[in-house]
Length: 324
Image (cartoon, rainbow, N blue to C red):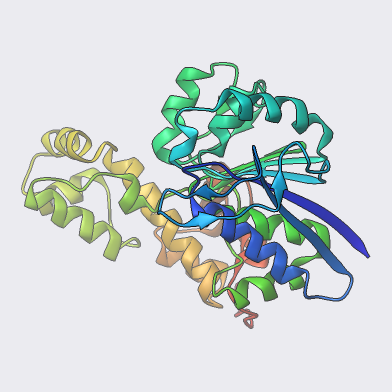
């Protein structure tokens, strides 16, 4: 039996879902024969902690009394905004003894304060990426992925991304089938790769203030396979191409071309995940024209080809159609 001990660090102001989400994943996996995750929680003094939501958690022990774990997991929450020096000191001393160091959401801020992220590529909640990069210049912050693996270090974005990361860790330890069964039990999808963006294209961009530009955003989302060149979009907004391009970027934060690229990638991903449509059909429906153009877009944005993306992340076992 492969046994993994997991120690979750608790502190006042912790985000309860950052704690319970990964723990439910590991506990669910432990129901399978041959799988064992020994889950423990600990606070500085062993006393109860109050979550940001008002929920009170009772730890198993103090951090000083906790045995060195295989996986040390540091959740996020409002309590990370002002790091407790005693907690930072404990993390600095204890983390090197763990085989795997994991943070969820703004737990990365505590690890950074302890000097444990220097020289590593990491992520955190999108709203704190800029702060993390500014306050800790020795840390390479990637604001886009939902989780990042860098050697023994694993960091995730906000809240539910901790569940995605925990499922990925279970898959590494025990295979895809067990992780997939746990995901189904929790009614979540085992399909989000670590380098999937934290937001959809529509959420990444701001919504335009002016109605003609909002209408264009909606049109792009509804017609990813259509003619989405600047000239065509400008006509829909009744603006000159030059005026349209400037106004669109000013109000959404993205150029029209960049916005279209993200919408098309997102549309292609959904088709690969949720349908058995062949790659040729997916490329055409998503506005790429050819499978090769779609492959280049996937490799550039996600680091993987469409066929490999589908193999790993589609929702159910579907029968591929011709063209796959």
